[in-house]
Structure formats: C-alpha cells, structure tokens
Image (cartoon, rainbow, N blue to C red; front, side, top):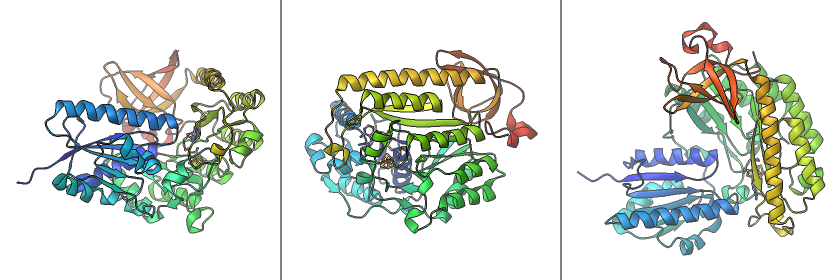
Length: 460
Ligand code: SAH
Ligand code: SF4
C-alpha cells in the first residue's frame, strides 16, 4: 500500500488566514494527506503567513527558521517546507534567499495546485515557486477542516478595494471578490449540519459584499436570506470586519430584528483626528464615526463594539493623538486591537516621512492601552450582577471559558453536567484584574424553552 504523508499547518495573522488554513487542510485531506497537530512528526510543514506589519514578517521568518532548523537536527530526512500567504505574495522569490530550505513558495492564489505540487516534490524533491497572475476565485474554496466544533469561519469576500493608505492587504490579496450567495447558503447549511454553535462571516469589509458584482445593498440581502432560511436555528451568527464608511442604519436594523445575528460590531477606528483619517484614506470623519457608535449603543445598550487603532501614523501630532483618546472615551470600546504604525511596501503612506519617533509611538501605544483598559473596566462594572448567555468555548482544570453574544470573555467555575459547546445562562459576578468571572445559573438553554429568546445581549 502507498505510504500516506502527513502535514502540519502553522497560521500567522488574521481570522481570514485561519479560515484559509482550514480550507487548505480540507483540500490536502481530500487528496489523501493526513492532518497532524505534531510538527515534529509531519512530513510536510506548511506556514501560512501574514504581511500586515513588518513585525509580523520578521516574526514569521524567525519562527520558520527556528522550527525547520530544530526539526532537521532531530530527523533523518528533512521535511517538505511550504510557505504560503501574504508574506510570500509580498516578497515572492526574494523569500527563498531569506529561507533557503523552502521547498514550495506560493502566494495568496493558486492553492488548488498545492496538492499536486506537493505530490511532485515528494517524488522529485525539487524546489518550486508558484505565483499565478490571476487572483483565486472565491468559489474554489470547496470545504474546510474546522479547528473545533464551536465556531466556524465562513468567508464571504476575498481581497479588498479600499486602499487605506497604510495597508498592504489590497496589494497581496487582490481586489474584492464576493462569494456568490448560493455558495454561502450551501456552506452555511453544511456548517449547521456539522453541529457548530456559531458562524462568523468573514471579509475585510463585509458591508461592501456584492459591490464587485454591481450590487450596493447585497449585504442586506444576504442577512435577510440567512435570517429567513436559518432564523429558527440554535446558532449565533456574527460578521467581521465592518468598515465604518460602509456601515449603515439598515444593517443595524436587520441585526436588531434578527434572532440569529449577535449584537457585536467590529468597527476599526484607526485614528481619531480628521486630519489623520483623511491621510489614511478612511473616508469618514470623527463625527460620522461617533454618530455610528451612538446609533449602535442606542439600539443595543449591552451590545459590543470592537475596534482597531494605529498610533504614530506619519504626521500624527500630540493633538491628533489626543483626538484618538477622545474617541476611545466617547465610544467606550469593549474590545480593541492596537498597533504601532509600520510602513509597508507599495502603500501610499510609505511615501510619507515616518516622522513620529519610535519612543513616542511606544508611549502613545501604552497610554492608549491604559485608557482602553479603563473604559473596558467601566463597561464591565456596569454589567456585573446581571444575567447573560455564554457560549462555552474552552476549558482548563477548574474553569470553563466562554463568550457572550457581545463578545465579552467570561470565566466560569466548572459545574457537573456542562461541557464546552453549550449555551449557558450566566450571572456576571466579579472582576479579577481584567478577567470577568461568572456563575452558571438555572438550566442549560438546550433544555429550556427560553433558548431562542435569550441569545443576544441587549436585544431581547
Ligand atoms: N480590513 C480590516 C483590517 C485589516 S488589517 C479593516 O479595514 O479594518 C488589521 C488591522 O491591522 C487594521 O485594522 C489596522 O489597524 C492594522 N494595520 C494595517 N496596516 C497597518 C500598518 N501598516 N501599520 C500598523 N497597523 C496596521
Ligand atoms: Fe486594509 Fe483598509 Fe482594506 Fe482593511 S479596508 S484591509 S485596512 S485597505
């Protein structure tokens, strides 16, 4: 019998990358390769990389070097090393100089050829680079080998048309391509049939879904269709990322009326000052952003708003930075990812002088994080002693970990008869540092009539 080869994938970066790795795992498994969680034993090591900041690139290169060198010392035969994704697309052949042991280099497209490229390499042990001219069509994603049975990613768009001046994503992932609605419905149905509890619709800017096939309001149509078909299902659905320039009242209204969509919105602010927002090509002002936040807060007082913020963009003065802090205090973000500006190749911002000293960037980052922590704690304190629904998604010896529909992370002391994957009624009891502790109260929703009516914070 022919020997089967095993593969292990390491993923860097965003949820989109995690989802693409799940697709690659499916693709390779359906071609007879065996997924393995043990890098030490796998015949094929795959690294799906990120290029959004220089730090991500350096980290990936360092990690790949270290892993491969270590494993080569431990083994008789060296593994096949595949490097794919955004870093690969950005650096292309240059990467073989930095990582001379790489066997296969592919960018963000043409992954459907990977099973045969790997097959050939196993026989001939020759190195190859594969960078097709055309961006991959979204419908090539035939299936996913999801990491767990709790939350499943479902990409609805690929690429991005926004060209924010600091961002390399459009250059490495291509123009926006929306997945046809019938394929999304099929994938949604498949995920449900596998017993998942949560589905996360993914895209760089989900609100512009369908614009590339000429439809302005296709996202609303998608939400409406999902609600009509699956509204009775016991599932949480959320979508990320919402670009503030394309987020609209009609979408917020549809989430309010829905019984499956969670009241959590990821609305990257990036910067608070209008001058910096214009330089970033974000196409909204501070006022418009805060107006959107007010609308969401009014509609879902206990809903969640998440954000991404960059400090130290070229030309950012102390006053500009204070504007960012002002928005943070006003918006009271529940979750935030913060970054120091990193100049990226091809981007417009890379032609500007990177004039904020690193020391100042770091000081701003640290101050920003402490203000974010304050507003987070303030919001959580207001919710202590209230009841909510938590989806249990992880566990350790003593605690279940889980999240609410609004994406608040909660830690719950374990109780008999419960397991991860369950929706449970929880009372938020205390704060330990930034950790929210809750206690299971009442019956499991799976066993109760209230299951469908208690799923989304701030809605019912
Ligand atoms: N499509 C999403 C996010 C894409 S990248 C959006 O529109 O928000 C994820 C985050 O990385 C961005 O939101 C931004 O905050 C950060 N980022 C992107 N390019 C960056 C750069 N050059 N320097 C620092 N942070 C960056
Ligand atoms: Fe990058 Fe802007 Fe596109 Fe987000 S919307 S991926 S930040 S270009």
